[in-house]
Length: 118
Image (cartoon, one colour):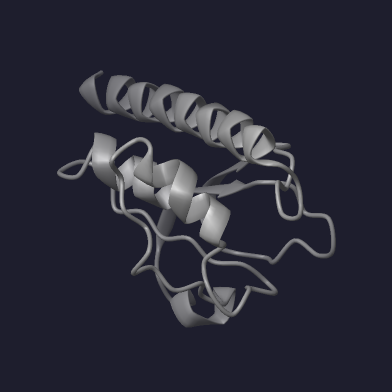
């Protein structure tokens, strides 16, 4: 969701990647559904392993709760967002998490843009 929001809200400004240490086989169908409610399709996305994006130089790395393990990724700045994993929960939890992620992404975009203006 975070990658999709970053690409949606700042496509010319942000290059976003989403990856995990233990990615699912496919994008969660309820995540697809709640993102479609925002008219942001993620049904063609594929979960990636963090190893697939090694070698990419990052200015920011955002983690969303390192429950099992938090991979080491070279970055200028690491940000931790403790966000509930909605997997296995009801649709309202997915919506709450989606909205929380969108708010955090928007705030981060504003912060990054302000840093690059000064």
